[in-house]
Length: 276
DNA sequence: GTCCAGGATCGGA
DNA sequence: TCCGATCATGGA
Image 1: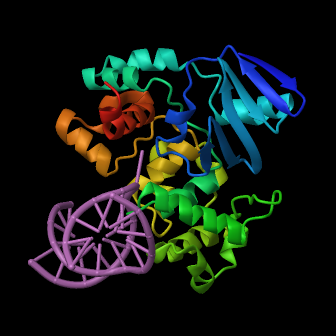
Image 2 (image 1 turned 120 degrees about the vertical axis):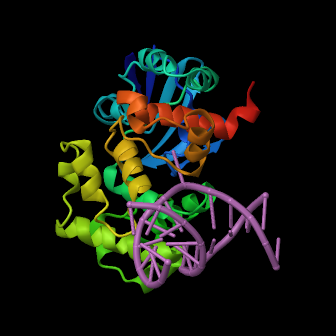
């Protein structure tokens, strides 16, 4: 991997297989949108645009320094996914099939508060509407980054709001869950920063103390926010996969990269009619 | 009109 | 411990 700054942009060459479509559309993030061949997103408090120019990844509106300190980690660019795919493919033919069909998925390292909040909103909801609610949450309560874009609101900012204030984002019954999370995090009752170092079982127990956070939301937060690759979110789609292909297996079967296995299977089961 | 969405909570058996 | 009803909202 080679990182070069060029004016206001950064060009990253010699990177492994990486699909922006698969990575942004596999249900792990909600603030990236495609226009033409480019993805525009707000992440880590910054507004950027990413696309491929041939085999080179271009990130607009950033510097080589930020690429090294933020984007390599955010896109998980220094991890060798080929070795992981090879390893998890041995577990089952359907996992191998999923890895072959959609081989450019990467697990992002997102801000953990934003991830927690986003997946609280995700419960019993569909992806287009989740994106809409998060958009309105940022527009109304996030800090302005530039003329058109707003950062994800902090726990402190949200903790001061009432359910009535939140009506504008039309999140339904999830409004009180958002507030409980914001209050527990901003008051220090839940120390999100310390979760990164905890054994995963303790981390789960800690997260589910928040109202509206159950097993699924906790696993998503651990996987996409804390980059705990052994976290294993099971939603309605994964339940179908497990029922069909792994009826007698427990989570331990999927190993240290269970989260990556899950991501390939999730995307595969939802998109296999589009390929092969 | 009905069903469903990257679920969690609550009350009752 | 387990199960079903319920929770807002909006698109299919």
